[in-house]
Image 1 (cartoon, rainbow, N blue to C red):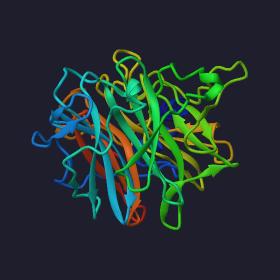
Image 2: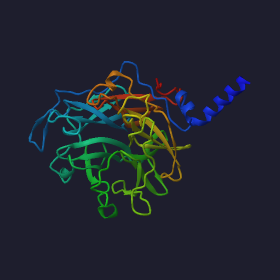
Image 3: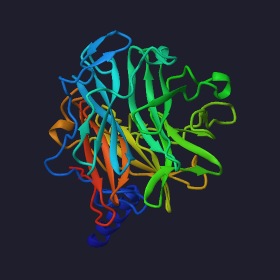
Image 4: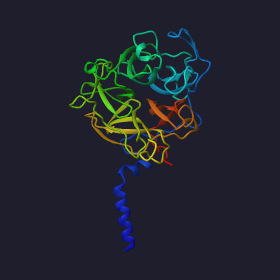
Length: 382
């Protein structure tokens, strides 16, 4: 009789625990991607460089533009090479968000070893975007490319007042045309002065290449730092947020008490349309105190995945209960953000593998790789 009672108790306990937890702690569900593995002995792949300088057009002087930190990269393919645009900070300020950020350029023939330009390719200047980008700069790029070879970058315009999502286009990832805030004209400018950042445009793999795609004739993106929202566009430049009947922003999913994403759910690299649905890669921040996940440090940023309906990108289905990538290496837990950060922003399909580029503690750039031909387990929890 005692054995029967014990068996019943175990069965009841199993029903009380979310079904996905068992699978996620040992292997990912079929819809998710991974695991992503760090190449042994290679990371970080990009570090600060105190010797690189350029002539800043606003300050009219030479600036050591990447002397303090290099992190939070976007990524794309150009002429069979991986190109990473990474956020770089100078030393003319104290603390995160109080230095000027510019975007550096690095290219690689193998996805692992990079050659860097000595000058930034994207930065605040005396142009029509200065009021949005100075003095904080251009932060946290997300990159993607269209079928016809037009590159699009979504980045944070930071004037140290209101963060806004800006958009720019290019044909070579070096010469860019800035188009301004993405919500500038939406709903008569209703959202342009509401803080917004972190855009993940929808992509899919076509003939072995990851490209921007449409659903029902529209481009889609997920965006947001606290909650996850959506927006649509017909031209990649002007975006219309998805709203409720009362005109308020529609929250697709939000932080969860007791999980790794209990504080923030911030969109990451371009979302991916698959046969199982749309996979959104995002960054989850763990809340300090009783509302966070006790298995992870307070304020830690880990990487999550969520699934949306492929016919209706605004319809949320599910998400991982544990992160597929978390801070483990020393350089992921020391730097500007010592609580620990793997902040995912760039991902490319290259040589039949997925290369994921991420910020390490707001100070370095790392890479992790997923080989679909040889899938493996995600980062261990303990």
